[in-house]
Length: 323
Image 1 (spheres, rainbow, N blue to C red):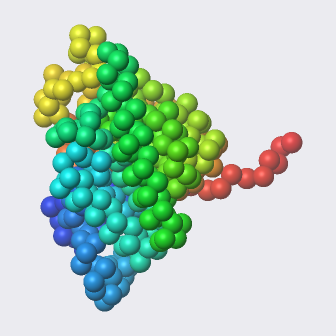
Image 2: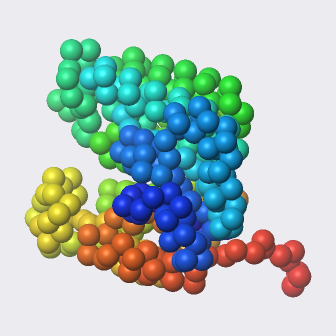
């Protein structure tokens, strides 16, 4: 298992300065945004695809610092009811697939997307309950008419570019937000669909990440991992539950807040997560995603690196010598 970082936190640095900063933490991998919500601060797929020499320099800069790309990330909403937004995010997805192939990167991280509640809607409609009955009808339409057809075609595109793994982050607000919905899409589409497993989004929904790892891991459906924590504010949670619309900029008012690793759940919990990943055969990258409003970029990342270095298992397990 190796340690990396989602480089969006260094969006203010240019590509080489970002790589120098990442290398200074002793990390081994970078997850790089190619557009959509993560922006293109460190990677412009269209430009790299046009210029072979620029791609060579891009790869050389990584190699000179002993780094590799764990995934290219183009989180967006290709199912958006606004056709301009949907087309933009779809195009970014296609160029990211092409660039991943050129760079030898097997994993693309993204969201499943969320359509409107019907063909005439203008905004996404995330259904969170089964009643009144029209909500169940909306959800059925979203999956059968939008999500499954889109992702079947997306999987076909991925197959053109080799062993590309489509790592969907289970994120509320989108159709895939928990293990059940991820596996439903995987069953409908194929083994190209898997998880960019971020425990923080599961914790605040009340889902046990270790149990989720066991369920997804049994189907080899964990493609990538985001190391991000979350703290539950029990006082606020008792008053308003976990479906919280208070702004992220006001953590004191929220039921939950993203935290750097170890500041939401203790080290022992993270050890359990590492153990569960090893049991299911995941031996790839833990990519730190720092979105803690209470810790600076530098300190928050340093704390996450420190704790994860303590809990990660980097060597392969031995043969059983005592039995």
